[in-house]
Length: 176
Image 1 (cartoon, rainbow, N blue to C red):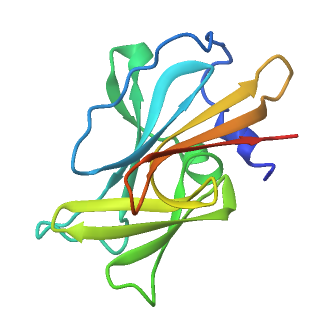
Image 2 (tube, rainbow, N blue to C red):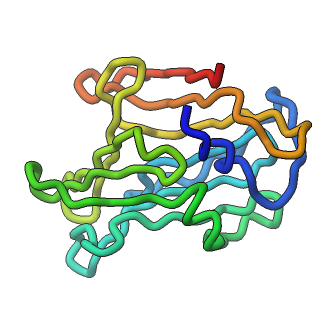
């Protein structure tokens, strides 16, 4: 696993919540692609499609990434620059082979490729491979050990739906 994944869980505080705690689910919109939640608090990172006035993905910035600060009244907050560069930001490259699509990489793990595709005006999806199956990504959960000086990612869970059957698909990636 990429060493930058440990940065994914580095944010404001180093507190932990029980895995039994229920996490709030961000409101589903046509723009939402997926979201990330972590074990050390309920604040959530949301990845939305960014459309122009005509409903097309914007070339320069097709994904808008931001926090929903559930532990601070649920307000939206932009990512800090360090979070954009090393933890939760994305790199998007327009696809040469698929019209209206972008190859997407999370900056924390550039080895894993996602595909952002426009499905119709003002609608897009993001796909990847989950448990060896093509899937539409819904959310990611990151569990880290925060007991040391630097948080260590123990595992990441990917949740989605198979692209052909729409059946739920899940994968747990351990950092062993």
